[in-house]
Length: 112
Image 1 (tube, rainbow, N blue to C red):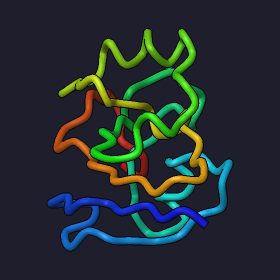
Image 2: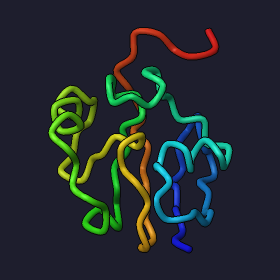
Image 3: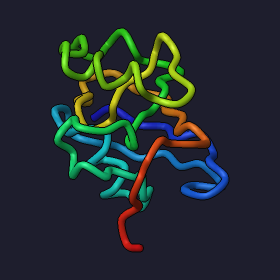
């Protein structure tokens, strides 16, 4: 099973974390299942950029982003060439190192 290594994030995961996942799970679902409360304002329907992540390792092991994800990523804060929406990126067989950007573009936050 591949590992997801989450780099420290000031609010969501101050110490960082490492966990194993089954191939085929979305990065967003994997993060949520392991206590990393990443935003997902559109309920994982690829209609916002709040679950934007940057893959520091393992980016090329993921299936390519579809056009709708690419279009949404253009609106993400802090976009980098190895950015993905975690609701759309599915874990494969390789380990991933994930950075959650400090900011998101969101008009409404869950739980508020």
